[in-house]
Image (tube, rainbow, N blue to C red; front, top):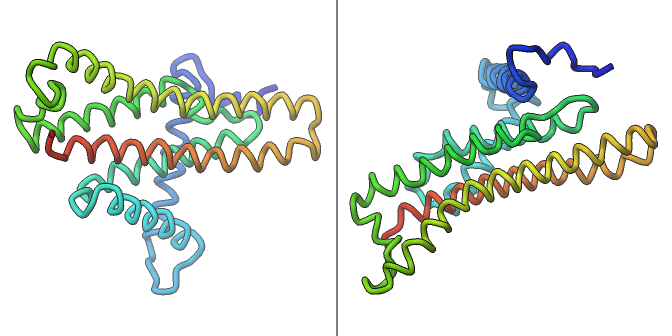
Amino acid sequence: MHPFLFLENKFFPPHVTYTWLIMIILVVLGYLATRRIDIIPGRVQNFMEVIISGVDSLLVSIMGEKGKMFFPLMATLVLFILASNLAGLIPGFDGPTCSLNTTVSMALVVFVMTHIIGVKIHGIKYLKQFVGPVWWLAPLMIPIEIISHLSRPLSLSVRLFGNMEGGHIVLAVLFMLVPLLVPLPIIVLKLGIAVIQTLVFVLLSMMYIAGAMEEAH
C-alpha cells in the first residue's frame, strides 16, 4: 500500500496535495527560524540563514544590486524547488517537481515576469531585441527570437521535471529490487541532483530576467 495514500483524494491531483504539504512545511520552518532570532543562531535559524544568504549572494553576482527587488521571488523558488526535490527522496512520496504541471507553472511565472520587467524598464524599446541589429534583418530575426523566448519556459520546466522524475523512477525500481544497501549510492546521487537542479532553475531564471533589464543592442 502507498505509504502516503492518505494525501491523495478525488478532489485534488496528487501533485497539488503534495505542493500544499510542502508549502505548509516551509511556512512552519520559516516561523521556527524567525520567531526568536538570536545572535547565536539555532539549527533551524542557521540552516535558513545559509540558504537565504546564498541566494542573496548569487542574486547580486548575477543581476547586480538592482536584482535585489527579485529576491522574494528567487528565494521562494529556491526553497520550494529544493524542498520538493528532497521530498522525492522519501520512498512513496511524490515530490511536486516530479509533476510537469508544477514545473511548467513555475517556468511560466519566470517567463511572464521577464517580459513584464523588460517592458516596465524599457517601454516599447524592449521590442528592439526581437528585431535584430539592423531593420532589414527583422523578417528573419523576429521568428528566431520568438522561438528562442518561447523555448525558455519549455527548457526550464522539462529539464527539472525530467531529472527529478527520472531519478524518482530509478530509485523506486532499485528499492523494489534491492531494498537494503545498494540503493544508497543512488540516493546520494539523487541528493546532488536535487541541489544542482534547484540551482540551475534559479540561475537561468536570474539570467533571463537580468537580460530583460539590459538595453537591447
